[in-house]
Amino acid sequence: MRRFLASALLASLLATGCGGSSGDTPQSFGLRLIGQQTVSNAQMVDGTLVGGLSGLDYDIASGTWILISDDRSEKNPARFYTARLQYDAAAFSAVQWLGSTALRRADGRAFPSRAAAQPGDEVPDPEAIRFDPRDPGSLWWTSEGDRSLGLDPFVARADRAGVLQERLPLPAAFRVSATQATGTRNNLAFEGLSFTADGASLWVGMEAPLYQDGPVPTPGTVAMTRLLRYDRNGRVAGQVAYPLDPIPATPAAGKNADNGLSELLALDDRRLLVLERAGVQGADDTYRNFIRLYEADLQDATDVNGTASLAAGGFVAARKRLVLDLNTLGLAKLDNIEGMAWGPLLANGNRSLVMVSDNNFNGTQITQLLAFEVVPR
Image (cartoon, rainbow, N blue to C red; front, side):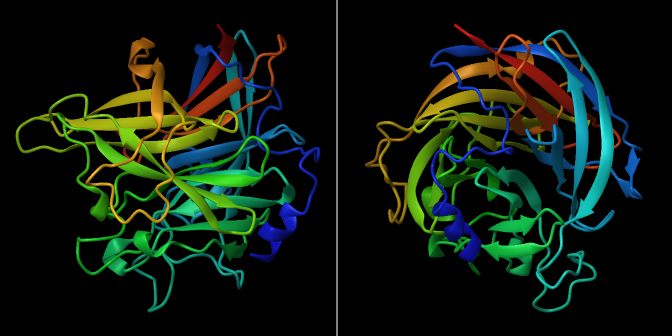
């Protein structure tokens, strides 16, 4: 945690070049769709297949974006991409791919796939990525771990070359267990990541409840997941319960459905944007996606850090307000949106926001980038 702690010593007013637009978000706002771009499922960059994009972030200094793939070194080594997204208030005109960077272990080796992993090897499941607003040389990313391999989720810092530098300590309650009594569910762990607006701490969002916190959402019931806040000493300084929506539709007989948190984005010291993504499987095995963006107000939420279980209640969860139901945008196709980040300020001074979909390397899905204007109300 040496570098994370060192960053804490920087002045809180440090000017930075990372982490999205520098404007403030108004207390009351909405989103206006500027436009979208889709990426070919055959798009190659530096010999790697573009897909599985589950997180992104913007670097003000260079005007470039990073986009992390959740490829578990199966198609190509675990990696992130660098790109330019060309848009203004009138149109989203192009995506320019600049390069691919492998995520690497501390010794510089690429992460292995499940098939190639040796005992003790880490097989990451990358989900979210952020520039460090107080350390221009650092990136932070999350992995959901792998319950079947006994691998815990983690939050890691890498340098700009993708080499692992440190991991934040994981609370015991989040460790995978041999039973389904405690810990994270498989593929339902650290999905969201956002630095606070001042860069002083780091929010991490669980996609779904811990086993001890109760069941996952159903078409008729909500579920409680957790948001963790790490301080610059690498300690979990607080946790908040966040209420996930019920699954918005019923799957076909014998088919699957889910709803979970897919990304976080800080607005100010008490508010977060939370992206919820639901998938409902039809009789033909295809999924219909339901994507909703909420504003979560943490002002009156109970700190549940140290609370063994959320199943019995006795706490105040974050309050949430619907900002946008993406299913109302009238898009020909709305795919599996998993990432979002602030972009550059528009010419009128308003913030921009970009979302990206994870196509799961599935030929029936698309990689979709949506650009929005943040409009004061």
